[in-house]
Length: 373
Image 1 (cartoon, helix red, strand yellow):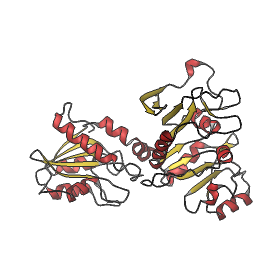
Image 2: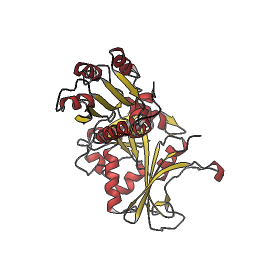
Image 3: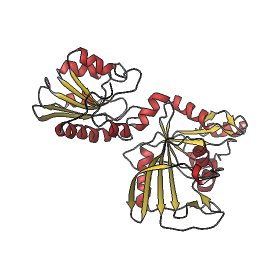
Image 4: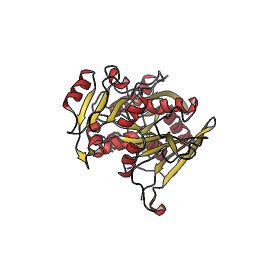
């Protein structure tokens, strides 16, 4: 089902690339749905374009059909993800394509959603539409990596972001970390925040920085602030607690948390989430499962060395962004990017597949994924 052709024309590739670019316009707005783009072509002319603009709005196919400049009967639809065939926030896109008389549909990637998962393709084929699957599937899989994990596992995608010096330090011994990287790099971080449903830091980071953890780019919404804090040490006077009624905030704790403090925080508008324990600490897997059940499909982890180390050692990180500034902090007590026990041998170290290196002035960014063993 995934691939029905081995070779594609340059024209097909061109239109699918345009559909992918259209899909990207939905970045930060479609969660927990995927980003999807659609291009309608008839007699060698583009007659309609569309993308899923935000959660609950028209899907890409219906958006493209609504934008058509002429009758789409007989046209080809290039769509990045398999058309849906069920009623959700919107009616089935398969119905819209059939009603419009679309003759051919080129699908980039099959939708793993159990409500779709090949059924949309099958319905179109049963009604005489020529459907071809698999064009630029790898690019689309990369674009929708958050959705693909969430829809199959119901757990959030975890992105670890670190800003560090050349010698791997993220803060001084007393916790000072402002600022490791340049303003240009920090603007990109706010875009990352806008593209994730949640942002996660530990209690130590909150005590040291008293951050807001908001997104300061107006085109994006603020991520849900997620605070693993076993004993509920968050001060009701902190900036996070004081702004909890305007930015959704979830404090994750264990049964050992102080009941009175939890009530104080709830009175500020902070949501509280009780989790299982793992050696006296929050069970991060349980936390992720509970957050996923609430519709949080992705988390940007901006923790300190302890929280980062816990996620890292448990194999819970899906993606890495390492910002490196041309500074050397030195000192044995300065805080490192990843804490925990680490590995005893270099041969056991986790390999990361770096797929891109970007510059932000004098800072540079390494992006990659953990190597699968």
